[in-house]
Length: 473
Image (cartoon, rainbow, N blue to C red; front, side):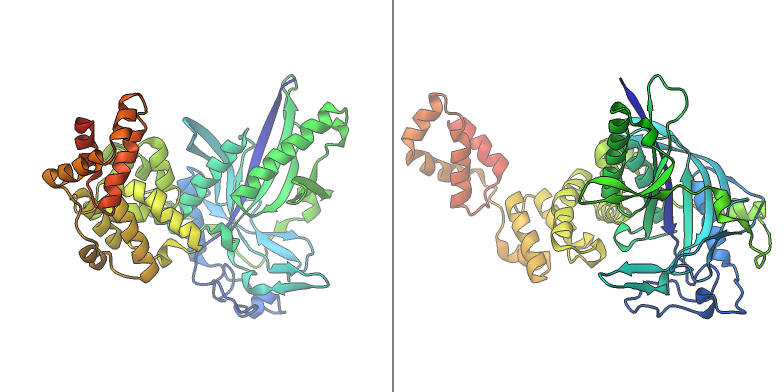
C-alpha cells in the first residue's frame, strides 16, 4: 500500500531592527545575559507597548515577496499561556488580522519547479531564551520582545525536498532583502513542523502531528523522515488510532519524535484583541512604495547567472543559496574574473576553508580582490593550478598578500622547447615504461606527467606538457 505524506511549516524568523517590537530596548546579540532589557520587556506594572513602525514595514515587504494580499488594516491579539520565558503570561501576536494572507511562491525543487502556498504572515514578539541545566534552568530575557515574523504555510508539501527547498527560498529572500540575518546557528530561524500521513486510498488528510521548535534544516530533514516513518509503522501494525493530534519534540539520540502533550486548539489560548495597541490602517501607497523598494532576490540572480554567465541551474542555485557567497561571486565577476573559474574556486576552495576554520565569509582573509589576483594569474598562464592552490593556502596561513607570494613563486613554464628537452630526458630514463605503455598500460601516461611536474616543482604548463607527451609517445 502506498502512502502520501503531507507537510506544513510554521517558520519563525527574527527581524533586523534597532529596537524591539514593542519597547525601546536594543535588538541586538549580546553575550551578557539580561543586558538588553527594559521594564516593558519584564512586564513591570504600568508599562505600555509602543509598536515599532519599522517592523510593520518589514512584515509588509515579506508579505509582498511571498506574493501575499496585504491587509488594509491590522491589529494585534493576546495569546494567553503561562511559561517562564513569557513574563506577561501572554504573547502579543496576530490572529484575526495578520499583515499578509494567501501567498504563493514558485520554488525550484531539484530539476522541478513547484508552487507552494502561504496561509499567512504575521508579526509577534519573541520569548526569552531558556537554558536547561542538570539542576536548574537559566533565563536570558535579552530575546524577550525581539520582533519575530511567523510565516505559516498551507499543508502543501509532500517530501523532505519540498520542505527544505521552501525554507531555503524564504530564508535567502529574507537575507537578500536585508530583513533578517536568518542565521540558523544563532537561533534566528526556528520551525514548527506539521506532518500527517494518509493512505493512497484515503480521502482527505491524515491526523496532523506538530513537532515544536526545530532549529536547523538538518534536523528538520530528520524530523520529517522520522515522523513519516513513525506514522507509517503505526498504520501498518494496526495502531492507526494511536496517531492523534498532538505536540511532539525530536529526540536526536533516538532519531524519532517523542510526545510532549496533546495539541491544544486556538480556544485554549483564549485569544482576545490586545487593548493597548490600536488598529492600524495600512496606506496602499505605502505598500506600493515598500514593494518598489524590494531588491534583487535570489531567483532573479539565479536566472541572471545562468543567462549571462553560462552557469548551470544547479551551479547557480548553490551560489544564490547564501547571499554572502552570491555577493562574493558578484564582486569577483566585477573584477573581470572568468565566471566558471570564480564558481569553481568559491565552491571548492573558499567554502572548504570557511567550513574547515568555522568562520564566516566576512571574517575570511581571502577577499574577492585577493582571490582575483590568483585566478587571473592562472588565466594568464603565469602559474599552474597546483601553484595557485599553494599560493592560496600560504596566503591564508600567513596572512600574506597573494601578489607578494606570486613574485617569489616563479612563473609557469610555457616554453615548448624547454618542456620538450625536459620530457626527452625523462623518456630516455624510462624505456621499460615506454614499452609497457605501448603494450597497453596507458595509465602510465599520468606517470610521465607526474615526473615532469616533479622535475619542475609543479611549474610546467600541464596542457602543453600533455600535448608534447602525447606526440612523443
